[in-house]
Image: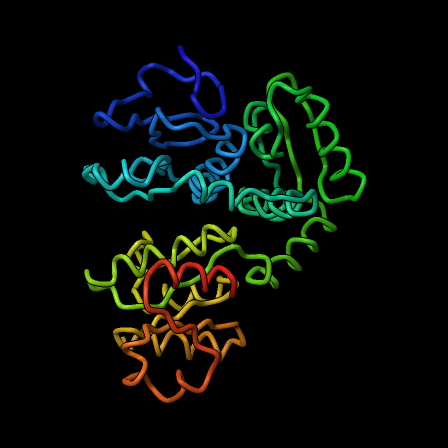
Length: 315
């Protein structure tokens, strides 16, 4: 038996697999299945919560083991050198993990309740988690009086009648109460307002790769997560999935340099939902852009570095 390199929980040697010179895959009862670039330094507490909420919880909610999907956590340049031998998967930088991590106590409580709602099979059912998982669920700083931190969160949730907690020697049983379910309903109605996702509508041609990188850098640098359709793993039809992503995003960035019709469509759909749409276009292509783009406060750029700077200021 060894230790999970993220949450520190017990993990069997049989659940560790070297994928290549860069990444090692782990199967952890708390974090789920993930691959880690071992040479990179990162905040383990933040990564453990990210993995539980994004990898472990969806698999539990659907009663399916995540045998065919996991997250790659690490450095982007290293990941690009690594062949995708085990799709489907999603690569996540540690900066994306930090952007996802809740910054306030209220944000933590909201994520905890939403997480419990995904685990709950029906209203009034009990959710069973281990003490190791509890540290990730409650965003606990490990090795810093974690029992005291867990009790503080439990007491707050119980005193506000959000949950009922039953402790045993090895497990914690959580039941969502009516007040908690009501709070969850309110959160789900305003999910996009609290979202950190930004949908990017643009052409996917090879000559736009550096432009894409400039856009993603601005989004990540300002604390958000870019969502681009050709990088999103899903089993749905492309158009419904795209519309769903736009609905769940806080705002949309539409890039019109290549006059991509899909980008115009996606920008129009987002505007119809009353979402903010940031238009961007290269200066040399502006003359051929649709007249609507010329009428709004479009970000006009000449170099990718300039695009990142201007977009960061606008966001």
